[in-house]
Length: 329
Ligand SMILES: [Zn+2]
Image 1 (spheres, rainbow, N blue to C red):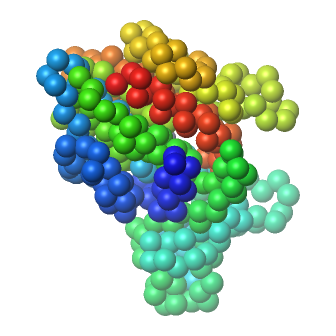
Image 2: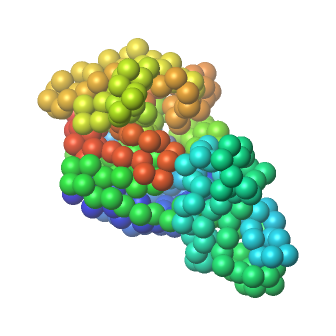
C-alpha cells in the first residue's frame, strides 16, 4: 500500500545534504524490483531496471531531501543559532518542535517572538534545546549539525498531513511505480535525488551521468484550494488526480513529455489535471538543461500548505500518479 510506504518515508529525517538514511531505507525496499542500485558522489540513489534494448532511456527523479536548519552557533546561555536549509517559511515554523542530528529535541522560536509585529527573519531565529549553558548545549549539538521539524502525522484516512510530503510523496510514488512496472521496453532509471531544495543539485549530476532520452521529475505542487484562496492562481486540486505540469520557474514542460503523460493517464483510466506553478521548481529544471537538452516534464502530487509542517496530500492522487507512470513506462 502506497500509504504505508509514505508513512514509513515520512518518519526518516533527511534534511538537504543528509539524505543517506532515507536512501538506505529506499534501497532496501526497491532492491527486489530493480536490476541494480548505486549511489553517486552527490549521494543520489540511482536504481536501474533494464529494458530490452528497443525502448528509451527514461529518468524519473524524486528528491529525498527535506527543508530544515543548520546550526551556525551556540550561545553562552545554551541557545542554538541556526540558518535555514532550503525554503523555510519563518511564519510557519515558529514554535515548532524539532529534532537534531544527535537525536536531541527542542523548539524553534524567534527573538521578540511574542511581540506583535516583530519581523520574522533568519537573524532572529533560534532553537532552544533545554540547555542552560553553552557547555550543556555542546553535549547535544555542534556547529554544522542539522535540525528538522519533528515529523508528526495527521492521518485523516484518504488525506494525510505531515511535514515533508515535499517530496517524500514523490519518493513513495517512484518506489511504488518501480514495484509495479513489469516487462518494459524502456531502460528505467529511478533516481532518488539529493539537495533539490537548495537548487536541484543532485538531479543535475545524475542526469549528466545517465544522459536520458526523457526526464520526469516527481514532486509536489501547490494546491491552493483552501478557504479564502479558492481563486488562487494555481488550479491544482487536492483529490483531483495526478497533476501534469505545464510550467514552473525551472522548466516549461516539453510538449512530447506532457502529451505522453496525458495519453498514459487516459490509458490507465486515472484522473489527471494540468498545473502551473508560479514560484518554485523541480528536478526537471536541472534534467532538461543537461547536455544538448533532455525532453522533460514533471508529474506532481497536489499538496496544500507546501513547506509548512502540515503539508497535506490525498492518497488517491498518489495512486493516480503511479497508475499514470506505470502506463507510460
Ligand atoms: Zn520538492
